[in-house]
Image (cartoon, rainbow, N blue to C red; front, side):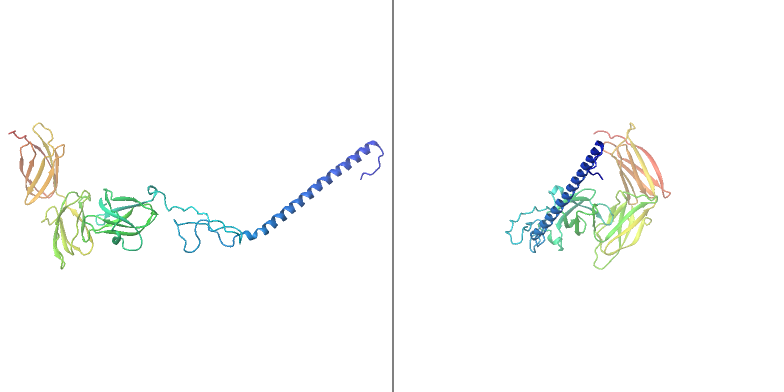
Length: 378
């Protein structure tokens, strides 16, 4: 728009400014075009470099964690990486890779946890011996020779053993029980719970005695009777037992046959269960003990002080009930049947006490306060 027309001085100044601004625009445009050109050249150079380097990519896969050739060792062996370099070039000296350990020190190995229990009573077995051998599909019992045995003793029946991760077989032996074998156990155990090892005594009878109120009856005499034995069977060696604190009892092992159980006395016809068949496993039975007499005694000396540790016997018609007085001089005789009895109390330093006692009515609770006289020193 501006030419050489310079009619006045102000117009010249304007024209000169316009020409100067146009020159600036052209200069900026020239630099922009130059930048695009440089970038295009750089891209071309990079592409050429990639194409030229294509031959340096190895033609075989590279194993960076261990051997990939057939016949090489596996975990824990000699781990080497393959050489990397241009085809036809001199091979690069292999560098040994670091072996990855299967586990840390023994103190960091996972635990193999188990609990041994009586299959008949479902109570823990506190004392046993166990072996742990690596699982290989063969009979673990045949491989016990040379394997260290561990003797375990704990009321809970739970054992713990740290083992390297893998699969194992466990063999447990306990006095009076058949050998227990469990194979192909995974360590660490995914469930993280103790594994159960059921110990069996062979064929027999396991029972639980309740009171008429539905509570376990502890310390109750239990008698085993043979009704009929199978051919070749032998008479059991043990024919009497007492219930534990939870009311349980058992007779094992027993040969096949038919048996009966009576409570308190061998000839008890009321608390009796007959026709119990035993074949090749433990037969479980429950018995309810009929309510009987309970005799409670409070023993004191001439000064009215308790007499501890005195021995009490209630004897009558071939039946005997026994108890020992507590520190407070208290003694309780439970499950006593009707009949005529002789109550006998003895304690070192005291004169023997004897009294005839009659119990009738089928059941009831009797409380007696008994004074014991100190014996005369000799």
